[in-house]
Image (cartoon, rainbow, N blue to C red):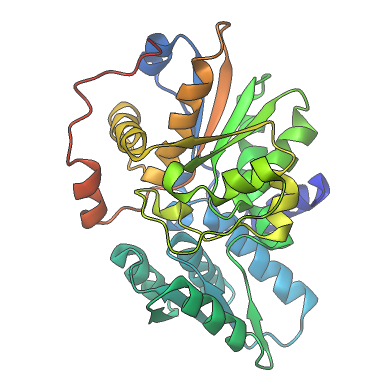
Length: 329
């Protein structure tokens, strides 16, 4: 597991380049649910997602430890791709991103707009093999989307910032889980700053490799790319580095696709922000958890990003869930 000092160092390193995103809340939602819920709005981060934090820290860490970085490569379905492309541009390092052909077109185009070369391949397996092969070349370095200490430390700065901004004891911190970089960094930051606070992950039921790994205490891998609205959580497997953190979580929830769509609609409506399904997924887990707590709880939710293309928006709004307001009953 990474140390808290790595998150503190990452925060100092990336602070000049990233946004200090706000912590927001909805009085109406708190009134309806009877609890106090805070949202760390990483949808307002550079590139529209928390991934900018890990990407920026990883690129800077590479440049500090290697004198001959000719090119950086990465594999991602979207937000990590944009993060590495953006970070490479900040430090004038060429970047090549390998993406599956079914990745969000908005995220692929945004990655190109930051100056990166984008290579589209048919399957995640082909993407993973291509980036591994590229990294064997002299002066080419691979920044994985989650299974990397510098990436995890960078992602942990979101919770680090939020806990300082709220500056009062919390009962729980929730974050979505795909490959596990965000929840891993969140765990380390929270355990150091508020040891009594529970740290809980949320994942789609249709993409539950991390949940199964948490329950079985052994890394589980999905055979094929899962189908879920939460496209930021479509990883086939967590990594050995993130698993060491995930196994230490207080709890782990999975949520169905209807709940993901429901909370995407409601959080966009209540917070007046463009929030992607992977972010809203965490709130669906909070809703499950609150149903088991009779005492008033104070909860932080990491809203991981806000990048959604038109095709995904159609899926999310195919059914109008705003006719049923949030309730614990």
